[in-house]
Image (cartoon, rainbow, N blue to C red; front, side, top):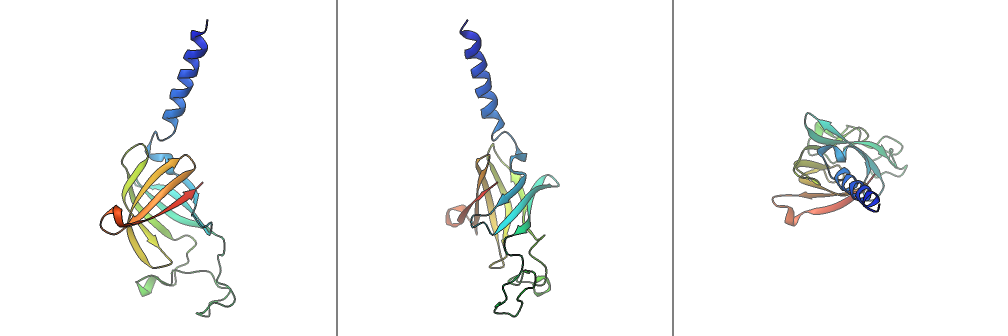
Length: 151
């Protein structure tokens, strides 16, 4: 008689472990960055994964902005391409090209940091269904910087 509950418990455990980290689409959705100032929507872009800023805690510059843009929408003013410096941050694609490599890792993508205007190679590791670690680096991941995003 005890075999049935034990068997059912084992089946539930297997389903639960396979549900987490079971596929490439686990990272789809909206994620809040580590300091809570932005939310990024990760989506499928032609079989790879990309991300766009969909929410900003402070979408406009403060009244005392040093460059005289007080009250105006935040733009990509650190972009190395002068033609792109007037593009609004809200709606800006900052992640592109990530490829699913294993149950919890996406690689070969690029992450753009609008605060510095720099683009880095990237790696994403899904730590749990609600937490991911992003690593941006130049060259090899060993010398990069990591940040944790939450759903």
